[in-house]
Length: 217
Image (cartoon, rainbow, N blue to C red):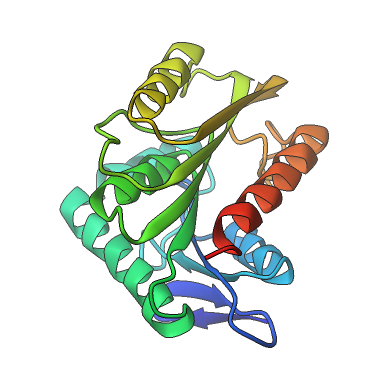
């Protein structure tokens, strides 16, 4: 089902034209968890593509992730994400179909950026414990957010500010805060933060949201 592609991981379900979802990893890079997530999305009926934001490098600790993130060039990464989205649409989607984006922490920041930078291409954004402020008035996407209750990286104040900006732009937005959870609670390889119950609920909501906004195109 899943297969490696140049600087990306692609997972394609069998049979028929299905919606495309761009998966933008957290600052750890394209590790096994995010590859398996692409396969999970494919089993749910989506073509899933995850770009390798560090081009072969991975972080396992927070200090390693900070070093890799500090070396990222924003304009270059932006171009790569736009290219990945265009590849997903042009290769798998029917003409005119838009894609979904699922981003984690750093990836959620860039997922919201993509929805603003390419409004005609992005129909739905799922943000896990991350986001960014901005002008969402040109965006045509609906937004779903999953946030941790105890999060030093994305505090409740920041979550409320992002939600307010999206809502004021008259975009559909639904943010959930999961009690007792910490940043990275969805990632089962993060033993210090993974919360199985919250992750299960967040996944259920994500599947429903993506199907609701992508299947009907």
